[in-house]
Image (cartoon, rainbow, N blue to C red; front, side, top):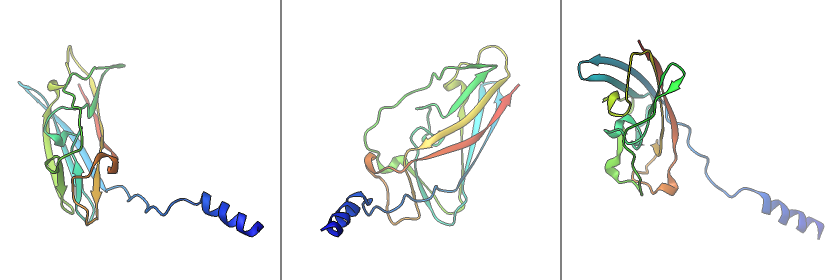
Length: 164
């Protein structure tokens, strides 16, 4: 009787048979900036350093093609400049909102900083890039899109720089 009770208690506290979350996708990111008469241009270079393809949901990243979320922070001295870009409210993603990075593939994108931040006065400005990939599909036979309740996100850093 005691053995049966212990077995029942043991079964009740064991975790369900859920596969472990995949290891974070090996993504290397680098940010640079250039200025011209039209503004300050941030260039993001993202490389899939793994031997397998990776699908990334581009929401809230520079690879989305528009400022729909703050993927950089900008400080002038000790003051954080307010984000003034767009915002997006979303449901489940569509396949077109994912991008596939082949093994060892590198992609770049350039965005204009003034489209999201009012750079008034003179610098220096400190810019830090980081965002969250809301869904990452790596080394799997699964293909996008996935519903939001099945997303497996990953944080991405892309460095910082100072503009004099």
